[in-house]
Structure formats: structure tokens, C-alpha cells
Image (cartoon, rainbow, N blue to C red; front, side, top):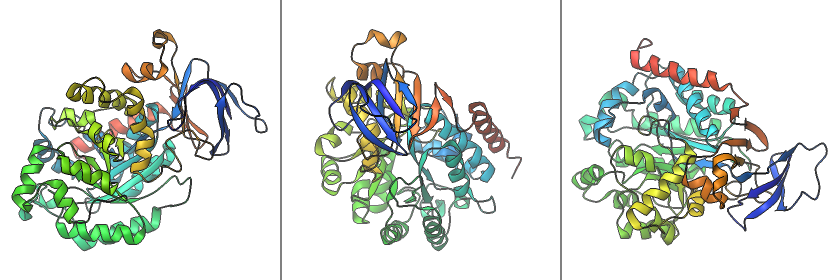
Amino acid sequence: MVVENAHIVPVRGEEIPSGHLVIEGDRIAAVGPGPAPYAPGEAERIDGSGCLATPGLVNTHHHLYQWAAQGVTPDGTLFEWLVASYRLWARMDAEVVSGAATAGLAWLALSGCTTSSDHHYIFPKGRGDLFEAEIEAARAVGLRFHPCRGSMDRGASRGGLPPDEVVEDIDEILGATEEAVRKYHDPSFGSMLRVAVAPCSPFSVSGELMIRSAELARSLGVRLHTHGAETADEDEHCVEQFGVLPVDYLDRLGWLGPDVWLAHCVHLTDKDVRRFAETGTGVAHCPSSNGRLGAGIARISDLLAAGAPVGLGVDGAASSEMTPLAGEIRMAMLMQRARYGPRALTARQALETATLGGARCLGREAEIGSLEPGKLADVALWRLGGFHAAIDDPVVAFAYGATPPLARLLVGGRTVVDSGELRTVPGDAAARAGADAHRRLRTGDHV
């Protein structure tokens, strides 16, 4: 495949106002100015005139099952929203997860996402294999997938927030987590499926589970993920329960390091920012969800200036209804500017967090996140004609207003979206699957 005449933003390296991409198999073979110097075999040629070529976007935090629970407690805080949601989520089964994940991943693809993580931490007994259900959905949609085997073992009777009926036994958790890693994790270059270990949060997980999960993940050579420092309520909870703020608590448990990325991190001290940079701990920034729940504005500009890895995430659809990943680029940029001024985060910096920054969080910066020869051919091609043509700078046109139409989305050189339509699964079928999952969960007919 050859893309020509596009404005190419490699993210790492100089922009090319009119250039080419040559793709052979699942890799990028060449990137440069002007027409392509060669075309492999019977190459498909794509005229990128009037288009912006970027790396595929990387979603570093999600809860796909929540597509089936959108609109719950629309005006609540995080803790109020969670309390209202836990018992509803406890009804889910593999069919609900399959439909919700299909809809959520299809929606991500239509917003330029080529790689997505997912944090699934509720496993009702006797409801089928929920983890496998979302993995199969990702295979069907065609996205590179990083499911995180989550868990909760600290229910209300032990000082946690979730009701006791939605938590698991610690040994059961560790056994199921190890099984998921050994069954599904593929560490090879170009892998479509990698698994992380992901206890849910300090207010739903015991310190013992956090420590043993970290030991398990490091013995298996996989990454660690959890929520951290999301709200002021969490700060108060951690001080009351553990005597320290969330990041100090995570540090005490061995949960900072280059193999860890944390979701949200809204409430950080200056010391926290320095520790993230020193340890290489990544942050999944979810600006729309943070705004929806009134959690605050994360110190992303400070983290980037310090050198910490920062990626973007849409978070669960139940706390960030139908948020497109491309839209989080604009939201992140505007929130930082609202707090710190108009130079706090540029359009190009925001795009980098959504691509190479996300790849760093997932430990895949050598494979994805920038358009370079030898990297995987995960590419988004955006149309900047029509109304967008009134802005001279294509990156500003892309980031400042409504997301432009998606002309083509490639995952490892395979077309997933063409002219704004899914080519792997029918878009209307994916939408129906999500709506059916919502009805099934809300009515509880399957329980």
C-alpha cells in the first residue's frame, strides 16, 4: 500500500507537508517527501491530497463493559456514581460484555484508535468467560488490544467501597489472573494481544492483593495498571485508611515504575510529579471523564515537562458517554489551557500524548505511536477539506475544532475503517450489539 500527497505528522521527526508512506505487510517501509520512490508489487495507491496522516491513536484506559450502563447517575461524584453502579454491573454476563465491547471498540475505531487497553475488574460468578468475550470482540473489530485483568477483593465489610457481592477472593483472583496472562498474552513484536495485571483501586483492593499482583506481573513479564489519585474523596479515603495520600500509598506497595501506568492522577503533589518522572510511571489522562464526574483537571502539562509518560484514555462509557478518542485530544488541550494558560499544551503536544505517549504507557513505543520505517503500519488518514480547509495549519485544523472525517484507518496495514465506515464488522450491527447489551443489563432478564 502506498499513501501519497498527504500532510504527514510522524510525531517523531519533522512534519512533511506533502509526502508518502510505503507499507509492506504490517510494517511501514518508507516515509518521505514527494511521491513514493517505489511501490511494492501490485500496491494499492491512496491519494492523500487534502488529508492529514497521523499514527493511529492509542487508548490507554477504558472499561468497555460500561457501554451497557451509560447514563447512570449523570450528576454524581465518582463515589456516588460507583455506589449506584456496582449492583447494576454485578448483573453482567459474557453476552453483555461481548455486545458492549463490540460497540465500544467499533466506536473507538471510528475515532481513529488503532490500539486500546481495557480495564475489566468485575467478574460475577457463573456468567461465562467475560475476559474472553471482550478479547473476541477486539479480534472481530480488528484493533490491537491490551485487556487488563482487573480485580476487587475489598468490599464494604472490609472498609472498601464496593458491596461484598461484587468482590473476589484473593487466591481466586491471582489464579485467574495468571491463567489469563498465560493463555492470552503475546509479547512478540506486532502482537495484537497483550495482557496486563490490574487490581482496581486503593478503595476496592487490599494492600496484600496490590503487592502480590505486582509480584505476579513482574514474574510473568507483563505490565501493571490501576486507578490512582482520581478525586479529592480518594485522597481523604487513603489518608483515613492508610495514613498517606494515594501516590505515597502506591509507592509504598511497589506500584511505581517503568512497567506501571496509572489512570487519572488528577490530584498530584509536586513530589508526586517528580516521582512519576523519576520512576518512569505512566499516566492515562481521561479529561472528559474527569470533567463529567467533577474530579478536576490533571497536571498533565507538569507531568510532560518533568518527562513522565502521558497517554490519553476515554475511560468507561458510563462515566464518559460516547466520548471519541480523537475528541480527547481537543479536550486535553483546552482543559490544560483553562487551568494554566494558552501555552500549556499545544495541538502537537496533545496529538503526541494520544499516539507516542500512549505507546510509552503500554510499553510499545518501539512498535507504534509514530510513523517511522520499521514500525507497525497503524495509520490514521483524516480528511481536511471542506470546512476544515479554512485553517492553514492542518494539525490545528485537526485538534482545535470538531474532529475531521476519517478517510482510512489501518491496523498493521489492514483497513479497519474506510471513508468513515467500518470494514471489519458492520457498524449498524455493532451499534445494535451495544444497545442490546444495555437493555439486557438494565432489565436483568438474564439474571
